[in-house]
Image 1 (tube, helix red, strand yellow):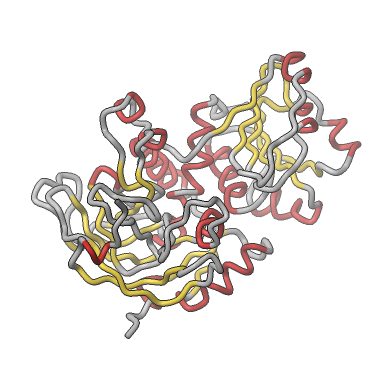
Image 2 (tube, rainbow, N blue to C red):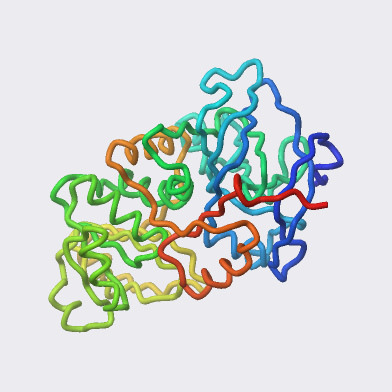
Length: 361
C-alpha cells in the first residue's frame, strides 16, 4: 500500500508540490525519513527543471501521485551520513539524478545498469521500500541511499552541473554504448534544446565531427559559434537533406515532438545508428526498407547506471562541460514551466533552492 511520507517519517521538510493535474506548484510541507545507516542526507542547493517534470505534474503519463514534489537534477551539500556510508562525509558536494533505489540483484543491477532494473525507484512520485512516496529536489533536503549519490568535483559549478544528472547522462550514455564516441566519427544531433546542446558538447569533447540537425535555420549561429558544432543542417530544406545523404555514422535524436524518421535514416551511412531519446506523444511511423537496405539500426536509451553517471560527471569536469542555464527563484517555477512548454529557455532552467526556497507557514 502506498503511504504518505508523514505516515512513516518524522523529519520535517518543505518544498513546492503539484496538488493535482492542473500542474500548478505551491509551497508544501512534508516529512522525510531519518538518516539510515547507508543514507546520505544533504541540503539541496540547486535543482534543474526537466521536461519530464512537466509531464508528471500534469499527470500526462497517467502515473502521478499527488501531492507531487518534482525534481531529479539535484545538487547540494552533505549534512549527515549514516554509520555505514563509505564514500561521503559532511560538507561534500553531491548530486542525485533520476533514481534512488533498485533491487541490486537482477542482471541489470549486477552489470551497473540500475536504470533498467524492473524494480527501479524514481527520485519522485514512486513508492519507496517503506511504502512512502518519494519526493524530489524542489525541496530543501534529500535523504538518499549512498549508492545513488554521485560526487561533484570542485571545478564544476553546482548550478550548471545539476542538469547533467538527467540531461547529461541521457546523452552521454548512448554516445558510449552505441560506439559514437570515437574521434573522427560523424555524429548528428537532432534538436538543440536541453538535451541537444549537451549532446553537442559531449560529442565534441569525445573528438567527433558534429552536425546539428534542426527545423529552425535561426539556430545555426548558436550551434556553430557558441556550441562548437562543425556543421548545421536544416531538416526542412530538401536540398540540404539531399546533400547530407549517407554522411553520418550515427544520430542522437533528442526531439520529443512527432517528426519523420525517414529523412534521418537517409542521412546515415550503411551500418549507421539512429538513437531516439525523446518520447513523442504518438507512435512513430517506420518504414522497414531503409533499415534493410543499409543495415541501419534504430535504438533507444534511458539515462545511465550509477557507475556511468559518475563517469559522466568526471568526464564533464575534465573537459569543462557545463549546461547553459537560466537560474530562477523558487517562486518563479510556474512561470518557468509555462515558458518551458513554449521552448522559451536557453537551455535549462535551474532553481536556486538554497537561496530562494522559503518555509511555508
